[in-house]
Image 1 (cartoon, helix red, strand yellow):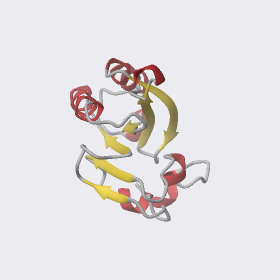
Image 2 (cartoon, one colour; image 1 turned 60 degrees about the horizontal axis):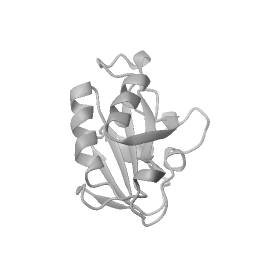
Image 3 (cartoon, helix red, strand yellow; image 1 turned 90 degrees about the horizontal axis):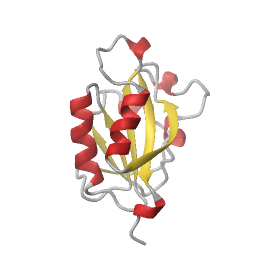
Length: 138
């Protein structure tokens, strides 16, 4: 991954992801150069804990890994939380059994709904998931 490849639209990745100053961001299995892709982002609180996050950015290559990620995050996701799931594009050459449809299906089974798609970079695509309004506590 290269920082300049973060978006074909020229929009910085952090803007596409909706990251804002002060957000608590947890990353799961990120690629080694994720920090380079987030250059220019507002000051974020990076956390390794999934118990207290505003936004999660998870990378998965297999359906089994993705199912674990959704189970782990959905149980601790705040009502207004965001989960971005990234999977390798078919054109990336990375071995995967994931596609946009498969990621969406697994996310819906975890009681979340997808609301946005974006290109992370030349290797990864991403889907944004949130809780349905009817499933939020307040």
